[in-house]
Image (cartoon, rainbow, N blue to C red):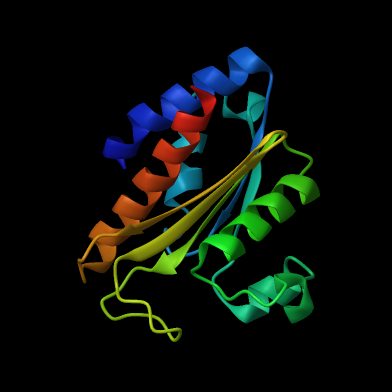
Length: 160
C-alpha cells in the first residue's frame, strides 16, 4: 500500500485546501483506493465514504440500484464508471465521485474483458472524465494495485 500513499497524500492535501470531499465506488481494486485515502492523516476532512460494489447483490442491496439505472451500459465500461461516479457523488453528498470497475484477474470477466482491464470515472461539479487502462497482466494482486494507482492518479490530475 505504501506505493499508493504519495498520490493519496497529494489528493488529500488538494481536497483539504479546496474544502472539498470525495466519495468512492470501488470494485476490482477491492478497497485499496479507500485504504490509501484513509491512511492520510485528517482524512475525515476530505473523505466522505465508499462502497466496494463487487456483485449485483451489492449493486442492488447496498446502493438500491436497478438494472434500469445503468441506461443500457454494463460494468467495466467508461459510461458505467461515469454513471457510478456520479451516483456515489450524489448519494454521499460529495464534491467528487470516483468509480473504478474492471477485471483484476487472473482471468477476464464475464463481459469478455481481459484480466488487467479497468475503467475509471471521475465526476465533479464541472468535470466528467473516464479513462481505461489495459495492463496486459493476469496477476490479480498487481492489477489491483495498478487499478488503484490509475484511479488515484486520475483524481490527482483533475485536481491539478
